[in-house]
Image (tube, rainbow over all chains, first blue to last red; front, side, top):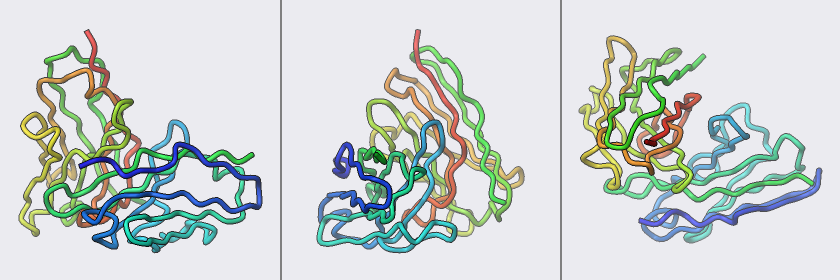
Amino acid sequence: QSALTQPRSVSGSPGQSVTISCTGSSSDVGGYDHVSWYQQHPGKAPKRVIHDVTRRPSGVPDRFSGSKSGNTASLTISGLQAEDEADYYCSSYAGSETWVIFGGGTKLTVL
Amino acid sequence: EVQLVESGGGLVKPGGSLRFSCEASGFTFNYAWMSWVRQTPGRGLEWVGRIKSKTDGGTVDYAAPVRGRFTISRDDSKNTLYLQISSLKAEDTGVYYCVIDKSGHYFDYWGQGSLVTVSS
């Protein structure tokens, strides 16, 4: 099963909003409400920012939000801050054979 | 505080083997599903396998690309997760993360990762 498709990079200025897309298929993103997003700063482990499409863990700012339409999930970061500059990865449950697939990652640059 | 501390990485020759350990603390390890996720230059983040809690059967699932070479096990008495890799290839080079797996739906906490470099 192929990796989920994410844009290689996105950018925005402080205070702006950016949206990162994650496109899969009916076998993963479109078939289950188990899309999650992970933030990874250089040299650090990934950290969950969204799970189950829209749920935000405690401690993650409400500037981070998730959504899904069909086979495409999205992560929106509003009120961009310098510390949001990182790589972002989506992943989706893909059934009990494949289990989990990841996207290729998106580099967010805060201008 | 949840802590996952991996160890066991290093420089290994192609064809060799390696065992990662992950010492867990700050949560009830024996009830947790645990996974290994790796990050390689060629494939990015990739789930490699999971072991369920013994109360959920203790079964192990592997990603297709690693089936047969990777073995996941756990020792609940030591709060430790293991990943044994045999017949190492250059494309196995990367960072291996121990993660708490929420029923395959998402990864809750990640360790700091352990690097393996496969090179002659």
